[in-house]
Amino acid sequence: MGDNGMGENEIKSKELIGIRLFLKFYFDYPLYVNRETYYIMEEIFNNLGLQMYSFSPFLSKNVKKYKEGVYYKGPAWIILKTFYSENLPKIVFRLLETNFLGFYPVKIFSKKIKLFSNGILFFDFHKESSFEKFSKQERDNLIKVYSENFGNVLEDDSLILVPDRQYNLNFLHLYGSKELIYMVDVLGLLNKKGFKGFFMQKEIFYRFLFGKEGIFEIINKI
Image (cartoon, rainbow, N blue to C red; front, side, top):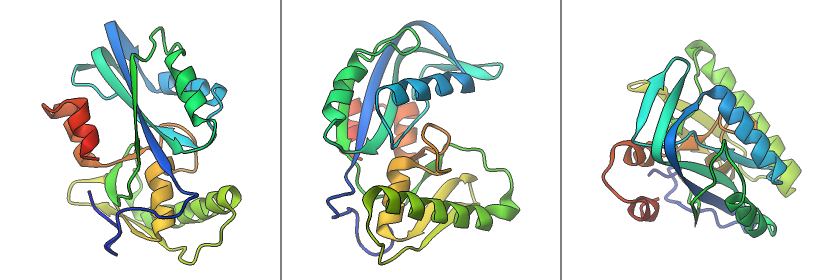
């Protein structure tokens, strides 16, 4: 995991406390999931009272591609990220009682989010020539979201998104304000709730899909 180049790996501001929730599911039979499925899940999260959040697609080692989606079977995880609030414990309790596509979470783990500045973006960015414009738009959006929700004036409001062109445009390096980088870590990009702009350390992503470690070992390394 990287930092923002200033030797910092945590946000000290009391207002910015990001929480990562690991929702474990177990699919007794193959579950077909496509893009529309995640829109349904967004609606479920919205109905639970979540306002500022992002979530990953299902993470599982047992995946089979089919047409415009994939089939999952057995254990699978969703990572839900949000900022801590007084009603979050109630939301976690309600998550355990919520039916997701015919299945209920069997376990939920939580951990505070530490600042990271290198990761993979779950969003197909196709226009490489306009990446600088995309970076500026996201910076402006994040400043607006920060100001509206936390009411603080940023001493440093810089943010630059740099794609790792050696591998993939979806591998990003973030440089600039610790607060804005942390906003990306928790809320993702695209200024939208949900899965489209989810941002995740690629090392953790690969461990979930290909590693031999258990969930506790993975969580402890985040």
